[in-house]
Length: 339
Image (tube, rainbow, N blue to C red; front, side, top):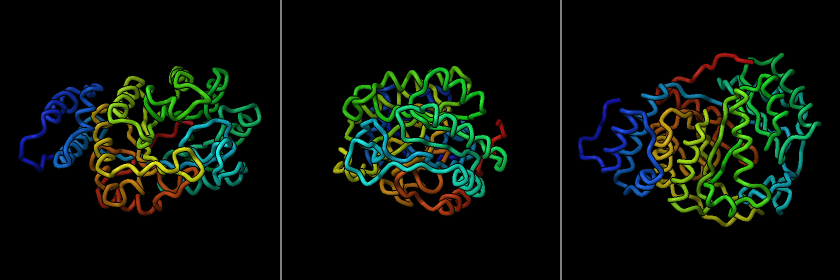
């Protein structure tokens, strides 16, 4: 991509141009703090550089994914941002999705051009009943839909990891959500280390690891940089980037929406921390960034999108995102079938 600005870059961006773009080495935690503190006038240059980095180290393709919950609500964990917790007075109540509905959703997802379909359950970790349902769902989907299947089922045992891998699960999602230093402020029913253990087992089993972030929960800029650095050290295949959408009845219901410029700084910073990682637009971008910000992020380091709705909140219509990718001349990635 040809640079469109001829004014001198901010010093951290000059450093990143050599270190990240040319040498392929992600920024350190201290350097990421500098990116997150860039003045508003430098944000377009940061996004432009992040876009150059993703084109050079990831290519031009954009990966599209749909998600659906097989079990919504009633979760025993107390993640303070989540309306699916059974411990809060939120309007989401426990609901199970039957297998025919799941297959129908997979077909609809594939029809949008998506190459990945993620089955999600609001649980601490799957029991035998849920694992059997997942196996049955995977078999039925594979019979009728040509799409890669991912799962997000909470914390796993080694046996469960091995089972999912043997069933052909392409990718497993288990988010860190926030920095190690801020984690106890957000979750108390399980530890950051427990999440890391599941992530390590998933990688060791040969599945791709999807490990995301949720920013705008009241963490400091330093903790935002800490999270990006910790994700970079984990080396996940994909990082979904979520922005808090405060949900009624949760402890974070009164948290103010993240500023759009701060969200764009974070997009650039996460790309400059992880030059080769799939960086996916996920929940909250509709409120935090809107249509214009969504476009800026796609031209600022993002190279994957969840289309349609999320687990408990509405997303942009799939057609709106797909049309935007066409407008930006960004080809949708066609993943090779691996199941």
